[in-house]
Length: 443
Image (cartoon, rainbow, N blue to C red; front, top):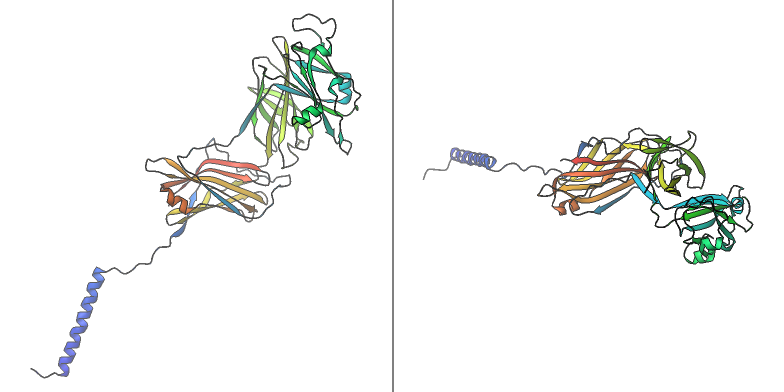
């Protein structure tokens, strides 16, 4: 065996080092370098879909003139789970009502002198209700009318065209009397009294007169209801109207009649004030003209009302009807900017950050429905999301949250969509905009 020398040791060490280098090269070729794990949350900018003709979107904004009724500055968010195939819905923009009755606002002096009633059928119900009055600065409530002090007489011609030589007696025209106490026990506690007309009180004109001495300026409401009448006055009108509108468009129709008529209208506000409005026919609509200096509302706390009365003759019968429709007056105080920032968590949407254009500081809310896509390609509802907070022109951002766990549990796949995006001004309690298909959430 050859002697172990320094040269031999150096050679051995070199071989070990070389073997190590070769092993290292082999490891690099077969085992990749570990990579850092990507963050599960990220943000992505998206743009809202272009509004369609059926959407409600107005970018022209103005500051409200009435005091807000909600001034909370807290941020709140609510999520409601939804299930099943998505059923699209649209906001109710128009409301309809119909009437088989009419109302007369009269004074005590007019009741004592006699007021005319138009009846289109026998068996009509006539109610007299005292009303309050604050015109003197203090509340004055009219006294109740004793039903036995009410007189009803037919006037003018009979329905057959024969002149009535003498008025019919009240006793033969009235089937029954109902006192204020009896109506109160039935749930109508407004000091009303009522008369049920008899079968002898057929269609025609009548005079209603009260022999009980009444305060001349006291206010009363006379209500004539003709239950089951074929003559129904119907109205269709917007449920929300811009506060600066100069006209209010309504559609009117009287069933069983093609008669032309000239309706009378008045605006009634939440505080009880009333204003007569001129009605003009335009196409198939009537336009109620609003004076330029007349606000449609004096408070954000209530609704305003249009009351329309029609008088006409149908087959020789006098027909009178009053119909009412309520609406919300609002100012378009904010709009949504189309550029939004979405936040994603593990591949599913977590929230959408919106920026608004705001006319002045106020409380605003957003809501929408998130949908996903099932294996058959159908849109399926996942959740409804709502959020609200206090915004200013300098700080106009509002986030709409999603629940990633609900999305994952649904098993639905992209595309995810935000539908029924609605913007509300909670200070006015008014809808400002609505977009049916607002945003496709792409990763």
